[in-house]
Image (cartoon, rainbow, N blue to C red; front, side, top):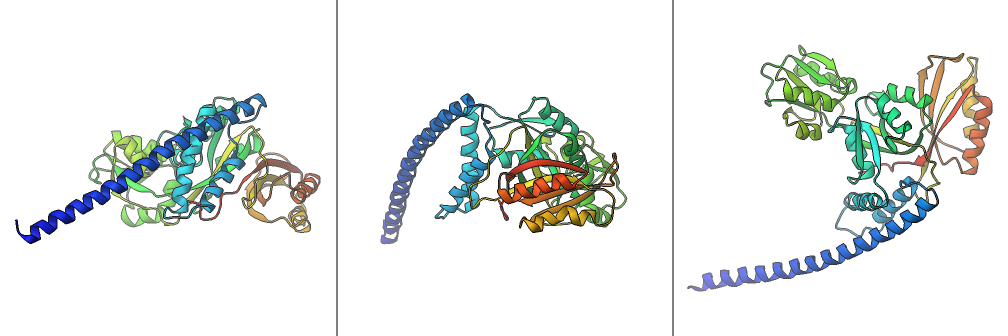
Length: 377
């Protein structure tokens, strides 16, 4: 064998030796991780017993947010903070499941953005309860079939989800958390082509979010609103004359093919979801921030809305959302959905709420919860 061949063999052996060394180090670290994960799991089980004996909830949103933020803050790289958060979210989810299985109601069927939001908030170690309508999501949680619910509350393109706002008026459930997901809509059919397609199905919000694209590329298609995008994908999987607008999860679940990807008119389209349950929350540990959500109404007279909001300035409380919706009952004309910075247990927020109760014709506090951080993964 010539010298070049000998050098190639030597180089290959050196590469193999170095890879073996690195892989042995990885295997050793993996073994340590397994031990540490199980130690953490046992501590979670012990904490769960204490919480159970004290009548405390399994899901503690402020505690989970604190753990995720601490993990991200202590991250030295090369993993991104988003990757670290995703790993710790699954660790929390698995440990929470050891305390007691958690059932979460969401707008189904499988493959919806609501299911995606549920997994983003709670990880994969939860029992999802898919419901056909938002009304059913609320009913299932209020009746105890699910401990928690996750519902869409607003979209960055189309605004508030009206039915959710209406249901929040009467429910005894409280807001415990929020999360948002990036909404990427795809045009899907059974065969992956538009041959023979006569109508496109999707949730009404998805149809609205893709109006411009549909007008440009398929203006003649009949547009039909259905209960969810996943339901549209299911219909398309059975009917070759139907195209669906849905995400990748629905496409995989119902085995339909993509004709066109990311057809939403707004490339930064996101939907915000609210976590609902019967429990109360504790204030978050700084630097985490809290929000408090309210539903208010005032008498129909000049300056009423101005006077309603004046306590915020007086007590230095910021408002992050103000949404009006026509009232269907009562002597007032509008309900106002308001988000404030801070927790109900903070003195300045408590002072604002006390004054609002006195000034408003209708007052309902939906609860306080950890705010999703800006730019969350």
